[in-house]
Structures are given as structure tokens and as C-alpha cells.
Image: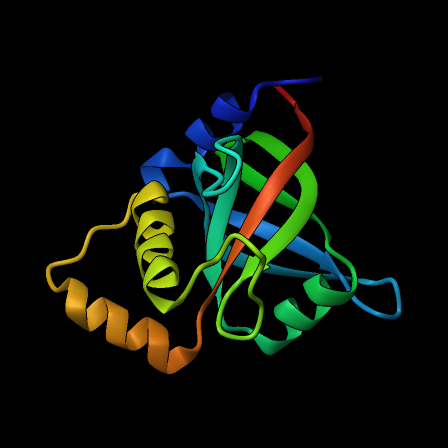
Length: 148
């Protein structure tokens, strides 16, 4: 059953965008993890994309080699999955539109807010993101479906 991108993301709003992200390992098995995902506009195209931050070596390695992924949102027994391709923006992954560290810093904040996050000390947030080497993962949706 199909659903919209907005409906999919809305399922996880009460839990600050908590969703399961599934990537593909080199041996073609699935690696899944729980992250906070938000809906935002792509910084270069303005198109709606999903976004989350990560510093996980496994997830980043998988996405660099195989950018296909699925994001599953849920609320109770209702679920929706968004499939797409990942675009990485971070200290080790700089797309042409990423003009520097300040743009990455602001994008990390935007993704955090899009997933329902708030922070009392943005300077501290920025320091932690930089220290951890956080990257932004933007997902251009190619398919959205649910059990709805």
C-alpha cells in the first residue's frame, strides 16, 4: 500500500523521528540501526529529503559503497517505509554543493531540528558533532509504502 512521504514521517513524530535505517553490507546482508530521522529540503535542490546524522563507521562504509537504503517509521502496528539513495555530507564526504565547515555545521543543526530535536547550547552541540566527525545522510525517496 502506498503512502506519502509526509504521512510516513508523521508516524514517528511523537518519538522525535525515531526510525530503523537499513543499509546493505558488502556480503549483501542487511545492517539495521535505530536513528532519529527528519524531513527537510535538500540544501542544493530544494527537493524534500529525509535526513539523519551518523558517525558509525559501518553505516558510512555501507552507504559509500552501496547508497541504497530503507527507512522504516512506525507507531504501534502502523508502519511506513521510505526507500531511496543516500547522499553523504560530512568531514570525509563533501558533495559539490557543500561549501565548507560552516555550511555542514548549520546542516547538522537543521537535520537535528527536522527530527524534532532541540538544544539549550548550540555551541556545545556543534563541538560534539565536530569532535565525533558526524556526517549528514540525505535520502532522496524513490518509493514510499506502508501497511496503512
